[in-house]
Image 1 (cartoon, rainbow, N blue to C red):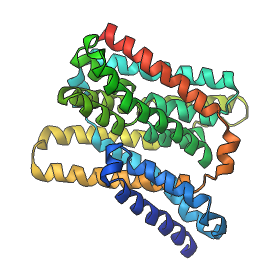
Image 2 (image 1 turned 90 degrees about the vertical axis):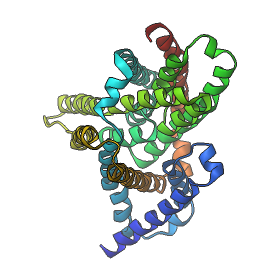
Image 3 (image 1 turned 30 degrees about the horizontal axis):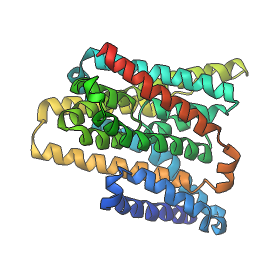
Image 4 (image 1 turned 135 degrees about the horizontal axis):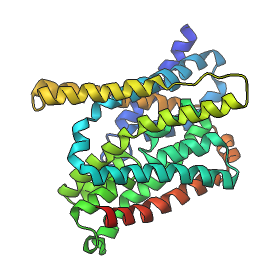
Length: 339
């Protein structure tokens, strides 16, 4: 127990460091969250000091990568409300659904064609389809991915999401605004960019209205994480059951609690929206959630050595690249014709 605490404290110290690095102006300008900085610091640790760390410390690291992960995702529900769904309208919700479903199906198909392992395929596809690193972390306990597979999946969505954050404003200024109106551009941005931070960065670079619309569309897309995780768990459990005598279904209970938190937040917003104490409370919960996810990402990074990245090869990046092309091109077509 004492040694596990030491492992936890090491991860916590790096997570605090990641938190403050993410607040630096140069880092904020790139919209790199503490989650991304955390996994990078964890990877540095994995390839240096971790090799001399006692194995008895591993319990604390696993606690961060498992328990803190699920608690962080549950509290993430306080960032969303059902009122957001009503605000964006049925067309934007339809586009979000199409983007998520097609990205997941295309990702599974491409992963099989490339001979990529199931775990990396599912996590990379989920991250591309929904909300980047947070979605990868949500899929990890269901896909039963190893830490280095999770780190690879996170890396791919971060790379392509960051590229989009700069690409979309450039395209908008170079003539995309003549094709898509402000509302369509907001839907396009929110329904196709990977991370919430990427949507915020790109949206603000294109104007306040696009920033608002894209963020709402993005948060509705985040809500789709719940049905995706439930469907993924059911399908994987059925496949495993058919291959063995085990007929049990792995239920992602944290996804249901995540949905419950959205419902609670929706009710609280209806009753107390605009009151100072409520706004302050939400900020505290958001901060706690983000730090828990930072702990999880740092712990996952600390289990990811360079050798494991080499073993993964280039295939995960090819998969993420293929999905990225679909998001940029397919998302544009959906926003233009359906919105």
